[in-house]
Amino acid sequence: MKTVTFITGHYYPSKRRAGFHNFADAAHALGYKVNFVTVGYSLLSFLRNDYRTKIPDISKNYNTAVKIRDNFFSYVHFTAWHPMTLLLPFLNRLSMKWMDAYGQGNLKNLLPIIRQTDIFVFESCPGLFLFNRIKHENPNAKMVYRVSDDIRILGSTHPRMVKLEKEIVGKFDCVSVPSSVMQSMFPGVSVRLDRHGLDKSSYDSCLESPYEADSINAIFVGTGYMDYDFLQAAASQHEDVKFHVIGPIKDKLNLPNVHFLGEMPFKKTVPYIKFANVGLAIRTFRKGFAATLTDSLKIIQYRYCGLPMVSPDFIDLHRGGVFYYKPGDASSCVASMQQALQHGRDASFALEVQTWGEVAESILQTVDEAR
Image (cartoon, rainbow, N blue to C red; front, side):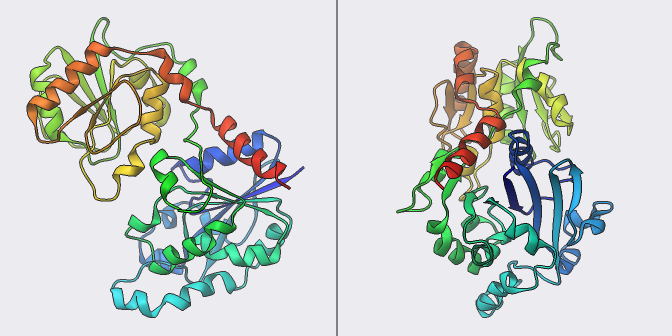
């Protein structure tokens, strides 16, 4: 049995699920032994009010491999400090060399795990500072960089990490990105596109609609940065359409056909997406972040359900069945919504969507066969 070790900022037992959780689960289902190693977590995390410090019993996982199930282990690499951006730019400049020390410290019980691993999968996180050390300790292991974020635009990224990524990215055996726009991030490096996977079974087994019979429904799912102006314009002119918003987003509109449903578990969102008529990808502009929205999980969910989509024109989704509007232009908002309604659903959209099992198998077999 071969071993895959995931180097990530996520904590496996956390209620917050991310793509790396799904990737790890899929690798385990394919027959690999899995180590899910949480990094970038230290005493400084308590000063920064890191959400992980609030997780019950996480301290029992400090520098200890905890069995989640057969051949699946969680490990928290807990240290005195970890690389992070500092309060003032000059402090970041002064601490450039100091950041590299993160990978040179005592690995404690992580060292045996490193030496027994066949494939490492790194996330875009402080774990990159462990790359050279891991390569030294286990030179025969295959290295995968699953680029979860463009670290150049994240406010929490220390500038040394940006430089380090550039230095080591060409040394990975596989560089995988979830967005087509991100393929151009590393000039001269072979980069493969592996969009986020989807738990298709949750959608396939969902048979009951949450909507009234014969009603027309549009859905937005997200945690913020929703375009209220679009919603105001489109809902005001399409009174026969019911607009539903899922996520921690406040109702600022008080329109009778706009319903703010609040946060809900993933599985409860499934019927709202599956039985909707239109998927809303209505996000406000954030400099540098447009590229990360082109293949987000919500886009993939909309596609699997065959929904036509509405999107602002600063995001190019590189797909058919998407209707664009100019932010702040009410007539453009109304027109794009009308076009989406007229287009209707298209089951062929689902053909682009893979399960996490398919994504994991494609990536891991590629590096496995390259031995």
